[in-house]
Length: 59
Length: 71
Ligand SMILES: [Cu+2]
Ligand SMILES: [Cu+2]
View 1: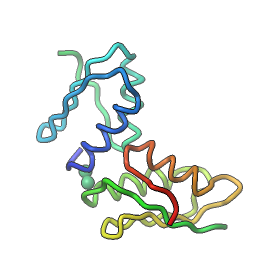
View 2: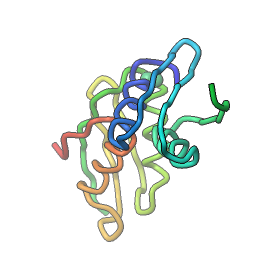
View 3: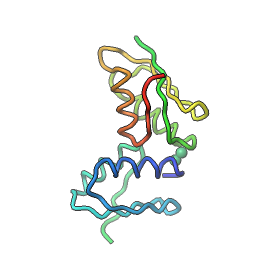
């Protein structure tokens, strides 16, 4: 994730998925997600943006 | 083979272009894709038995970019 284009894409796919609350930290390349959904579902959704996705654990 | 030009909104840099070219370019039936940041479009050459302008613009929207459809 390197620019507003990426974070915009992440925002749209997560909104489309629905039932998620999230915060994007572009400088740190982090997305904080609050959701009841499975981690794998969230990861697959983020991967759609064509970026590498790494699970950093819970807060 | 068919060729279509699709609008792509929301790209801001070369890395956006690259991720679209990589992901859409790897779909079955997509022979070639060229994305233009300046013109906000994607020119795709595809096999009409496996893809359609609709399926391609849906795939772009699925990535989180807006694709208003073929132009
Ligand atoms: Cu970007
Ligand atoms: Cu970009």
